Image (cartoon, rainbow, N blue to C red; front, side, top):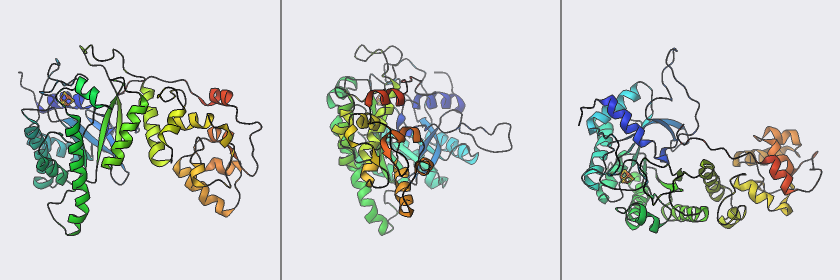
Length: 411
Ligand code: SF4
């Protein structure tokens, strides 16, 4: 194998990490200080964006420790049977690289995942070692997200939690049978056991940290990723799985990652990726379930046959099927009703509730509290506004739907 320097390795291992959506780039404005008097950049190899526990958007070095892997998950470009260039960082090498990037203000933290080398325990040990070196030897105060290996020993998962801010374990596919078919070495029960073990440690954390136990887990949450469109699971199955994961393991996030065909794909996989819009609609539905008081059946009733409507967002799809609920009086409706108005987010609803304590609201006042009054207007009544005719679904749908766009997942 040719000798690779750190930059060569970074090019390979940052590229290999881009298929993991659980450190999602969030459409942040691209910035680069090159040629300016400023410092820092949001571009470049392996830089992605994620959210810290306090809600700040942060840039992370997103990289694999290695893309060697002895498993053969058919949907993964790094599987053992894949013909890709391989590379591996040493623990100290990656810790130093992270520090260099951090000092230059390129990143605020590290997102680290890995292929399975030798054994799950060995791989997890190496990943923990990177985090340990950063925290204990280099006193790194930045953010660390470790993608943990479900088959690794519980002590190693616990050690990972002592150094990382966030842990994630990929559930990978929505159904156990799909996982067995497409990722034969993985085991759905062990993945869930690992999630349960991390959950338990997170629950114990509060108690231990109250007594200032230095060995207490520091991580503040766990998340997971599901691949969309690699198997035949419909949106109902995906969202049902998410709901059980949120409820069972108190996950911070489920990330949805549209399946991306790899070179020389298996015949067990679809030849085409799903529409990227599907991934987007799943995120919107996930949000409605968690923060807007919607039931899964209500959301799915907006689409057909267990699939979300790709043309319009799930809240709008639901509203168009329930004209009897609209128009809603913005000055009288309760919070949970306002949250059902298309175009009103949780912040807008809070702002409206606050503003109406001072008097009844006009349309222009509501407009100042929302991001798109054009979307909201057909569904509301204000002091000076009432839609001229009853909500007419077909024309409204045509007016509010934008044609689905298909873009590249990682551009
Ligand atoms: S374990 Fe599976 S998904 Fe993870 S790197 Fe290896 S082949 Fe890819």
